Image (cartoon, rainbow over the protein chains, first blue to last red):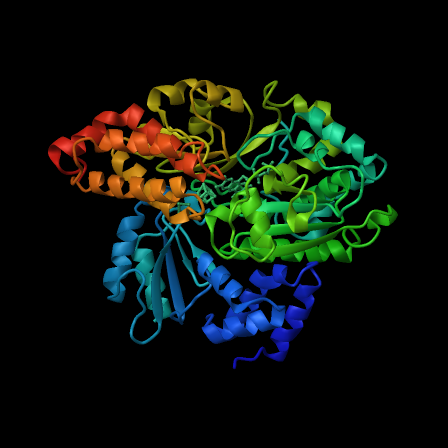
Amino acid sequence: MAEFSEISKKEIEEILNHYPTKQAALLPVLWVAQEQFGWISEGVMDLVAQTLDISPAHVYGVVTFYTMYYRKPVGRCHIQVCRTLPCALMGAESILEHLEKKLGIKEGETTPDGQFTLSTVECLASCGTAPMLRLNEEYRENLTPEKIDQLLAALK
Amino acid sequence: MDYVLTKNFNVPEAYRIDVYERTGGYQSLKRLFTMKPVDVIEEVKSSGLRGRGGAGFSAGLKWSFIPKDGKKNVYLCVNADESEPGTFKDRSLLELDPHRLVEGVIIAAYAIGAKTAYIYIRGEFDLPHTRIKAAVAEAYQKGYLGESILQSGFGLNLYVHRGAGAYICGEETGLIESLEGKRGYPRIKPPFPAIQGLFQSPTIVNNVETLSVLPYILMVGANAYRAIGTEKSTGTKLFSVSGPVQRPGVYEVPMGTPLRHFLQEQAGGMLPGKVLKAVIPGGSSMPVLNAQEVEEVNLDYESMASKGSMLGSGGVIVIPEDYCMVKALANLGRFYAHESCGQCSPCREGTGWAAKVLARLEAGKGEAGDIDLLLDIGRKMTGATICVLADSLAMPMASFIKKFRPEFEEHLTLKKCPKG
Ligand SMILES: Cc1cc2nc3c(=O)[nH]c(=O)nc-3n(C[C@H](O)[C@H](O)[C@H](O)COP(=O)(O)O)c2cc1C
Ligand code: SF4
Ligand code: FES
């Protein structure tokens, strides 16, 4: 079974101080788990459930409700293109098409070498600098096809 | 005009506590601790401040619903989930001036008697999360948080809690459920959070912008705040403007500013070659305005209502003449269908069905009667659900069809989108 690292254990100990119930620590502890393991497998869900004295079924229900907990491994570069109306008005569709062509994958897929995963997401509160995407944990804004080319070249 | 919320936006590194203090930051606490909590509530009531999260309910009045018997812990939750399409003002506040929010949190917590507060921040906010966490740590170090703040005897613990991707967690009871470690399913109300909220205890949920106004009100007093804006919509407000305008971004203007003026002066007018067709004035959940209405309406709650729309979160989305309104609405249909939490069947089925009909209309595969079908779906899901997400699609849908019906009919007769 999966085990938390010493660093993760320390973080979890601190997190538990913030709440009167253990269950309330579930989202933050899942973040710690995703940081350590990269994604949330069933084994990791069991570990989290055990750590917080809650049922694995509850953990599963929560993990599947939120979009940001990964239930399978993602590429080293996770490209998340915003497609909601304000971005769409500024050409989000052509940005996505360009990425699909350049990477040779469709939205929702990962390149065979595991380098890139391409996703679409809803409004990331960056509509004034549309079109935009989130690359792992960083926003890239005011995109053009040329900027995408530069970005991909730097990431290859 | 005094800038209430954006005065530090151009101050380099105002997110650092020493810089913030040099701009007069945390000064309002001196006055705060000379006041009784009820007097703080009265002052905020009298300022006319209305919640900036979307509903526009009096902030002071909402606080006054917290029971004063002191029997249970009271909690304050900061709504930093900002996910309403077209809205990006809270992100600016968190990135550029996070200590203003921390100072506001201390004021609100003192007023309602909360000893614990949580900032619920959306999971995708990377830089805002870094900035607010650093600000909270600095505030603890300087004695603005923790036990007996500035030797006042009042103590407050403030924690940052990161969400994980779900629009519905911006709804205040969805937020509370999520904070308790559950799916973000909105609760049936009553009981309202002020009576039974987080951990079964009295709770106030306030938006980032609402709380960030408080230091100003304490410093200058309710009268000075009320002197800005209109009689019923007092003060300034942040507006996020997006779409093909010259200067999209976040701007602070007094309530009551004519929208036409705002679009020209702040947003800089349309990009070359673009003509304004419509504006969604308050985030994507609000009814759309046509070009004529844009000329006539002001940026305040009452004026928006008189045109059948709402100020909402202040997300001003500008749609140009060359963008298809069916495509625009289909995009929103997809968004709300995706974000429905699925608890109530009128919302789950209604948003899903509307999204499907809109997609086929857009593709030129619509069937006779589809337009009225959409209106009917909208009517059936309005007011029939636990939260107002269902209305948030029904309202734009009804207004898009009412004001731009010919564009919808064209898709039926031409069997394709005329804009290609
Ligand atoms: C579907 C839905 C989503 C919402 N999203 C947000 C949000 O992202 N941020 C926010 O402050 N309020 C949001 N609200 C409004 C909150 O329910 C609540 O009214 C608000 O946080 C109260 O704060 P205020 O009184 O300071 O405005 C949302 C409401 C609904 C129905
Ligand atoms: S109206 Fe929709 S989003 Fe709101 S509680 Fe019901 S199903 Fe969930
Ligand atoms: S619509 Fe893309 S960031 Fe808001």
